[in-house]
Image (cartoon, rainbow, N blue to C red; front, side, top):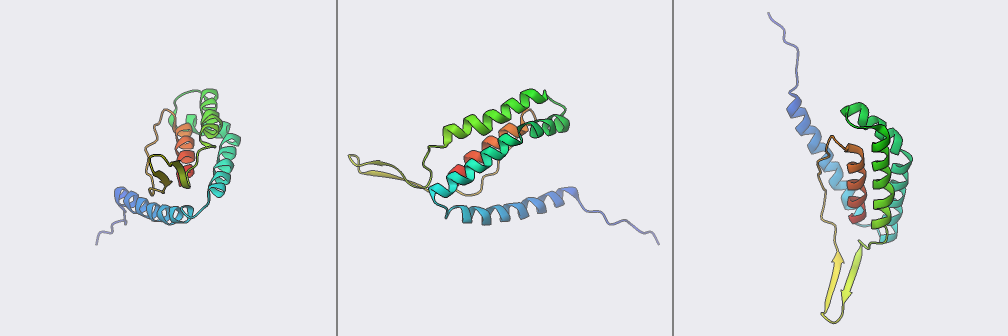
Length: 140
């Protein structure tokens, strides 16, 4: 009798993993949708600060994993994403009424869209991830 080692299909494993992560993200997004503007702003501020603190280690990991670029350049891009982008989005309202035009009788109300899936390039994986994470969290 021939024995075969049990093998799992890596593509099926990836699909299962993606489904699990999507379910978890959906549950987390539902919780985030309930937060106030002040709560969201505190979360985004903490995330930006954490990304700034880890700018160099993230850059090192990106260079090690992709074999592309220079650590110093990637660290600079990480800090741009975590500091400059944060300062740009910080004053934006993303919860409740965000704009009102009484003359036109228009009220804009921010409403979360849902879970966002995004592609991150190998040329700048960490700075792009930081940017996308901050803007998605700000928008809930």
